[in-house]
Image (cartoon, rainbow, N blue to C red; front, top):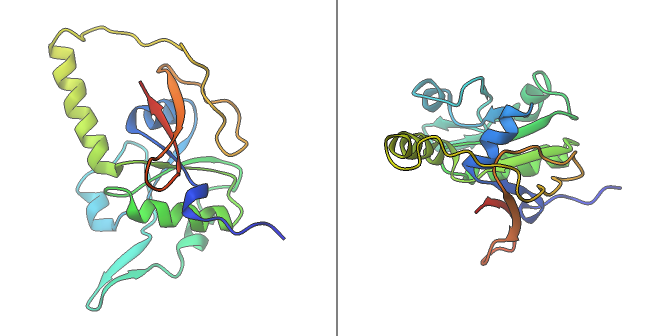
Amino acid sequence: MADIKKPEDVVTVNVHVAKDLLGSGSRYLDVRTSEDYNNGHVDNAVNVPYMFMTQEGRVKNPDFLAQVSSVFKKEEQLIVGCNIGGRAMKACVDLLNDGYQQVTRMGGGYTAWTESLKETSRSRSGSEKGKNYLNIVPAPKILGAKTISTKTPVFEKKHSRCNRRILDVQ
């Protein structure tokens, strides 16, 4: 029997690495509520809410895995995001335990995504304009996946408090 996956088994990448992964064929699963999704989302994202708002508060979507499996194959490379990262972590653990093999969490969620768009706008208007990052360091493998193709140098490190694996750009 396979080991039960836990949050420390989830690979987390920052927005820049997530963008590179999306550019090389990964697909984005947005696990925020439909209302949040409709207020703005990553291009070509698929929305399957992990939780619903009820009168009692947030309740886990009982059909989450079935809904995801109706859209994605278990072999596909998925980037999972929510608003800041909590629901995405829980969704990633559930997906890994359901047999999805290449699941990556985007750290910071859609909030970090929108912040990176603001940074990109500022850097294009400043001295960073036209700067092109090259493959300086080969990217690490994600959960047995093919090597990540990225334009930005990527480094794997452990989070200082929870010991989770994080892919980072320097």
